[in-house]
Image (cartoon, rainbow over all chains, first blue to last red):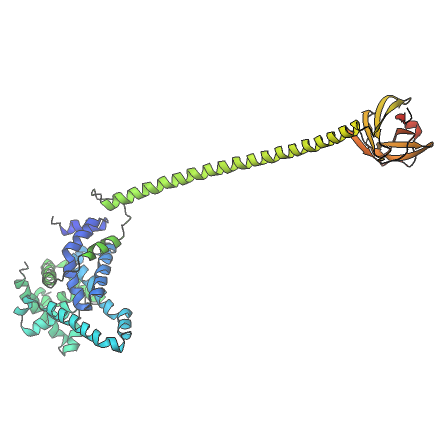
Length: 179
Length: 258
């Protein structure tokens, strides 16, 4: 059953758990992909996904349809949670408690995870973009960096980051067949 | 405003990414309200980003869904949708159950209360009966003792007959010269005022000896002991008794000799 987005929102606001179930079935993988690329660890990614859905469920009343699509709202909420997670004390603590004899193992594991993320990161659709645009899209949409972070990190003026993104979006619109 | 130039700055992309300041956001939102072409462009950007996210999707582990759905709290808001979910049925059922249990609890509480009240009543009645029984027992042992005294051949039974000042008066003294015990039993003595009491005397060799004071009552009254007595007599004295008998108030008298 395909639901209208407006009906889905109404049902979520009415506290209909079947709507939450539907929401999960349709959007969990897309949101999880965003989270996983940012936090890079399965256990944390799962925690963030759970937090994200609970927050969406609890705060659906705060979503304003007139200001954008439901997915945009969910995506930003989720990405912020993921970024918070990477900055959280939990991660700092996890890094501190690594003992030297466990260190090699940890590095191996981390590298494996990073590799997995890199492989997940490869998106065929992005191959159609010029390398400088592909970089921007990857950094912004897949890794969760802000435009100014990307500008600083790669020494590109902020205005250039914005126009490259704009151009990339126009190309992607055609590839992804957005009407 | 040149819409195309505005769009070309990439501000809508930044808006979708949530990267604008509050003020910039408000400005974009104002423009969006005014301009349908801008709204269409925004929707296209959003759909592209959404599509990209689907391209980059990663399936989470299957067991995560249940975990998330069960930890999502049921919202307690008025039911507007006609679709009643299983959760709502469960919530309704649990409310009904809770009401049922509350009623049962109240019911048992009141029953328990009335039972404990009844128990308290029974306990106090039981106590009263035990007290009565005790009184009866005391009375009985007193009577048994009296019967023993009356039946005992060691006790002489001396009838004190009424005198000229009280011709109808009568009392009996039970006296054992061996044990020196003296008991008095009133058959008929006048009712006294609160200021007066009866006093029993033993006449020994013509002299009156005090054997104690008493009030009108049933049964045997234990008096002071004496080993000797020629006669017994009862006078009326001021409450507390008198060292010498007032002969004009002599009520009854009886001799121990025949």
